[in-house]
Structures are given as C-alpha cells and as structure tokens.
Amino acid sequence: PSPAPTPQPTPQPTPQPTTAPTPCPVPIPSSAPTAFPTPAPSEMPSPSPSLAPTVRPSPSPTPMPTGLPSAMPTPVPSPSPSSMPSPLPSHLPTPLPSAMPTSLPSPMPTPVPSNGATTCGDAFCYASLAPELEPLELAWATLVELAASEPHEDDFSYVEDKLGNWNRIKAGGFSVNDESEKTPAAGYTYVAQLLSHDINLEETSVLGKPMDPRRIVNLNTPFVDLDTLYSFDGMEIGDLATALDGGKFVIGNTSNGLPRDFVRNESEAAITLDARNDQNRIVSQVTVALMALHNKFVDRGMTFAEARNQTVREWQAIVLYDLLPNLLDGDVLEDVAAGDRKLYTGDLKNQSLMPVEFATAAFRLFHSRANSEYVLNEETSGGDDSPRANLFDIGDNPHLEGGSRLPDMLVIDWEHFFGPKAQHARILDPLYTLPIVRLPIGLPGTPSSEIEVRCGEDDDDATVCGHQDECPICVNEPIVKEVDRVNLALLDLLRGQTHELGGGTSFAKHAQDVLNVSDINVLSLADMICDIPHGLPGDVECGDSCNICGGDEPKFRYYEQGEEDVPLLWYFAHEAIADHNATVLGKLGSRVVAETIYGLVEESPVSILADGSAWASNISGMANVTFLDVIDYIGW
Image (spheres, rainbow, N blue to C red):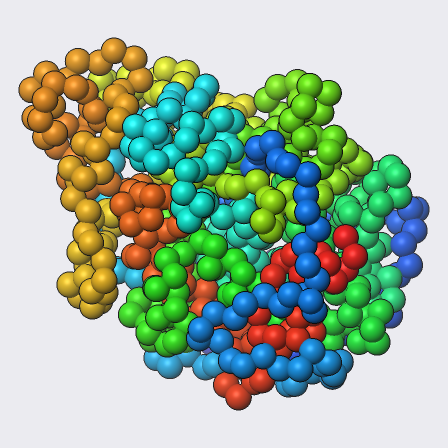
C-alpha cells in the first residue's frame, strides 16, 4: 500500500465495557411521553386511492382469536346512559356531573423505576411473579394429551357430567339453569382481545425453546394507552398514508356505505398500525368503534392530542369497570381496586414489566371463551336461510376471518354481544372450541407454518395426538412440523413452557406461602387429573398406572407415569371450575389479572387512576363507562 503523505498518530483502542450487553435489543425511550403528540399536517393527508399506504407485516405468534354463537331473540334496545347510568362498583368515587369540559388535565408522567434497571435496558420486558420456581417441563405428547380436542368436536356433553347444572352446549353457545351462573356476554371476549393487543406483543422467543422471560422484549408499551391504534412498533398513525384526515381516523365503508371497517388498500389489507386488530370481524369492529369515538371527540372541538387522551381514558374506564367485572372474581377485584396488592408490586410494577403468569397463562385462558359461531344480526340469526357465522372458515357458512373488506351481512348489531339480550361466551375451559383447535395459519398474530417441538424421551411419547395427524417419532431430537392449521390450546401450553412458567400447583403454593395470598384453595394434581369425565382419545389401556386416581378407567396416560404438576394455564382453568363453575376466573387467576391491569393503568402516562385526578367519562358523566355506552354515543 502507498504510504500516507502525513504520519497519523496511532489510534488508541476504544475501551470495552466490562458488563454483559443487554439481552433485549429493542430500545425505547427511558421515560414515556407525558402527552400524546399532535401529528404534523403532513402526517394527516386527505384520503387518496392513488397513494400506496405502508402496512406493517403481520406481527408475532401471539394470537388472541375470538368468536361466539347462539340463536338469540329479537334484541331489545338498551337504555341510553343518560336515562339509565351504569351502576358504580362500591369502590368507585361519587359520579360527577355529566357536562364535562373538552380541555383535559395534564397526564401523569411515567414513574422512574425504584430500583435499578431491567435486564432489557431501556426496553420493556417480561418477568415472572415467582422467579424462584423451577420451570415446568412436560413432554410434547403430554401437552398434546392435555390439549386434545375430541370431546369438543360434536357436542359438549362432558360439561353436563362435570357441572350438573349446565344444559347441553351446542356449537360453542349455551344456556344454564341458574341465571346467576351465566358466563359474560360474548362481546367481552373481543374487548379482552383488543386489550391483549394494547399491552402485549412478543416476538423474541422461539416457540418450543425455553427462554428466561427477563430476556424477552415486549414490543408494545405495556400501558393501557391504545398504542395498538396510535403509536405502534416505532410508527405513528400519521405515518400511514390515508389513515388520518384532519385529525380524525379515516373509517372504511361496507359495500352499502356503512362506516364500520378499516380503510383498506387495493389488496384489501387494513391500513392500520397493528394487523392483529384485523384478525377477525368482531375484534376489527370493536377497534373501529374506538376510532369512531376518537372522531366524535374531534367533532366536538378537541384537537387530535386531546381526542387521543380522552379516548385512552374512556378505554381505561371500560377495561377497569366494564371488562374486568365480567372476567374476574368480584371479591378479589374489589380488594385489588381498593389497593390490596400482593403479586404485582415493587420493581415489577414500577418498571411496567409484563408478568408471564398474566400474559401466558391467566389472560391467555380467555382464548377458551371463543365460540364456534355467532349471531351478528338478522342475516346470521341461525334460521334455515340465515346461518350463524363461523368464527373461522371451516364450513359452508359465512365466516369471520379478517383481512378483507367487511361484508354488509357481517356488520354487528351490538345487542347480540352486550347487554341483557346478548349471546354468551363459552365457559373457561382447558379444552378450546373446534375452530380454535384448528386455527388457520397465516392470519395476523398466528404462528408460521413450521413449529419446532420435542416429542419426549422415547418413541411411545409421540403416539397420543388427539385429532391431529399422528406425531412423528423423534426420540429426544427436535422436529419441525409443517401444518396449515394449528391447535391453539396446544400452542398456548407450549408457549407456557417457552416462557419458563412454573407448574400450577407450585405457583399456587408459592402465592399462598410466600406472597401471602391467603384466600385461595390450592388444587392438587388429583383434583385436576382424576376429576375429568373423559378418557384418552381412542382405546388406551393404562393398567397399573391408573392407581393415581383409583379404579381402572384411563384418564391422562402420561400423568400416570410420574408427572407431578400441570401447566399454569391448565391450573387456572380448573380453579375457575372449582371456584365459579367456570363462569369467571378463580381467586388466584383473578388476582394475577386484576393486579396486573390495575398496575399498568396506574403506570400509564395518561391515566384515570393518576394521583389527584378527578376522572369522569365524557360519555356517561360518571367514573365508569361500558362498551355499549360507547356504541350508543357514536350512533352505531
């Protein structure tokens, strides 16, 4: 090489840090904004079909499907909020006058972590409520056995055997003899799905490969702030061409001109930040209703930022005072709302970490709420000429898969989903309904077509696979299965092992003995394994291994061979059965959900629970507001 004309000083080596690099590679600002920004005019173009919008690819394998059926009587119009305000839970403040100003109080700044940094540096991460517990590791065949769907294919008669007061369940919808023991209205399944999209997105781990949750990045902000609508994955809603117009969301029309859909591009992909919200027709219409609420506030004279703040506050009130009472044990919820916290405390809360016991078990169990089919309106009422809509495309009936323009026949009449005439959700159940155990690949939020699994220690572990194709023999070696449909119940159990969750009974004992959760009954393995009214798929002899339960009726083959605990999601399902006939979560599952959600609302930069805030809904004039109030307010 040619010599340099001028000698240069020898560069000194750059000192290298002595600490290990942070494992989470996705940085976010160390402090969240104290107010949501107003997009520049350039970010709010008028809609133009000639503009090619930027649409984010479908995100992580963290699906939250939903759907619900049942033939319903003619809906009765619900009273308006002004004529019949929603009752306040006992722990809520006195209602304020209904006339509310459009100016908004300053949002609460994000608290500074009390004690050091997380393992993800400036990124939001996951964590465990009980990191001392050893992860539960079950063989692939055991997980398959626990997620077997055969008893759900044609009827749900096993529920009659298990819970004698339930009537026969048909097609995912049901009724009960005792009015006090009905499950919640079907719509809450989808409000819960949108909440999951608002606070939780995980793409760090590989399904089937265990990973310390403290190394897993949460790509959502964990706050209850509707970032799934406004600011998601490094993008603002104003970055999407044709998504905004004059500070308002552009809402797409059905073929008959009804504004109920996302605006879409030429390929009919939704122009929205989070493609998961277009996974099915119900969650998409729940999402668009909140977009219409934002627009209503702009029409009343609010700026984009003011309307965003107000919509977030209304959403938080719906979550706390409408959704959670329909999901959780009422006594536990009241205690948590009054400040009784035992699980989600300290740095977990101050750093807004996402507990895997919540995201991967207790809240994920609401997948089992999804019904096989739904009544949406008169055209899908269940008659000979108006079949109910299937949750996914598995038959000849109309279906609710998203990803394309909303047909008029699938526009929701919301009284079928909320209120006294609504169809009801399924029970909380360790076995999911048929469309959920045959979930189509390729929808936003669903896994890829390849899933890596480990069958177990020997060939025999790979023989019980429920309705799926027979498992390949793998003997300790991981295999990759190519599938076009997946059993979501199985994937949920596999995700629990991926996130290194402890066993259900172990977690309950830890909560009782170490975390001072005294109001729970710890279920034993026999409580959950022996008290199952169906046996294995097919004819399987269990011989001496039946001794764990007594008698000679086969139950769960692999648990007869030495397993000592159950997955946490499975535990929460059986606790719901034991505590509430499967209508809402049991006491421990309810505490995990309530403490997490209340904690995340309290830590949100804009929060109705901020110290000193005097919150009242612009819709109801009170502290609480329901989703049906929103539907009435926007004129749907």
